[in-house]
Length: 173
Image 1: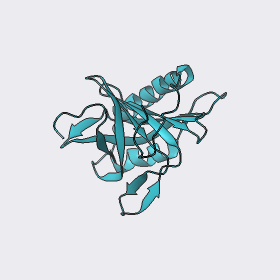
Image 2 (image 1 turned 90 degrees about the vertical axis):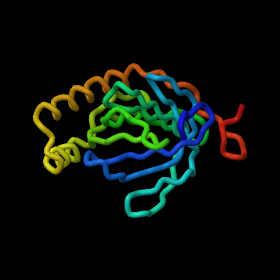
Image 3 (image 1 turned 120 degrees about the vertical axis):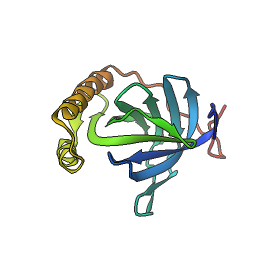
């Protein structure tokens, strides 16, 4: 896909710091600009892991991928359309590679549930990744700074309404 546009279905690859894909899925582009891609995914859509196993997205999702940020944000909605969680991956800015939107997940995350403050999670996974991938002290500091920025973002975030999907799985008009 040379020039992705609104309405296109794309592949998204979440990679480890060494570039190995550990999870992939498809998503529908809702918005695209030089700064940002917003995608949506329908509950029940397949997600593939590195071993080839398939799981399914539990909730409707809207994801925001900024090309100049070290995080991406996911809104998760229940079947009734209520926001149930914000999840922010501390990750490399995404990039387009052969029509696939890819990012490197650095294991540190921020989560926020309605009516609760945002919190940093998975610090143990980040510590393991820091050893495995030899993150420099400067890089670790940069990722914690991104997590601090993500905490503020999550606490101030105003989610849009849940995406509405038609019977065929695409967005309803």
